[in-house]
Length: 163
Image 1 (cartoon, rainbow, N blue to C red):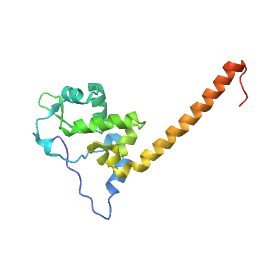
Image 2 (cartoon, rainbow, N blue to C red):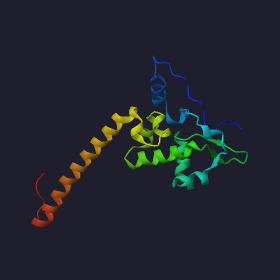
Image 3 (cartoon, helix red, strand yellow):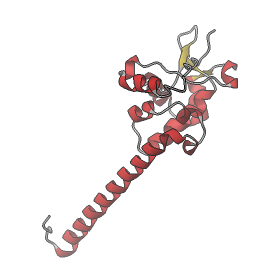
Image 4 (cartoon, rainbow, N blue to C red):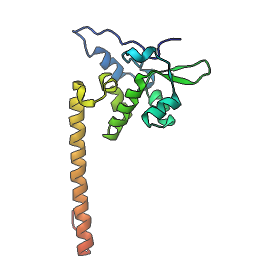
């Protein structure tokens, strides 16, 4: 049986972001998943159902993440997907990032540290993206507050206020 996780490419100090830039430029279907191995990677592989139970994600969601290159799976002799234990952390991180408003394409562009560490704040390379997402959310809140005030005025005065 082969490793459930491919080993990352060594990066030289002169070109730390070259691989990330190449990956970001490639279509999602052409990208390779390169996740760092963990001590538990050699353990018994997890079935998709077990991974779903451990993370609270649906089997369909896990398949979707796998198809988008966010997870690394192998095929067992019966054709079923199997995952390394590290996939538990990865799925939980994907769920956290989706809950904060990131799309799967945005998550795919993040460095591997974002999916391998338990807390998103532990990955400094993503701070700018998180700040940008926060600014987007604050703009949306301001827009919703303006719409709310307009609707309240319409309801209380019975007339639609001018823009």
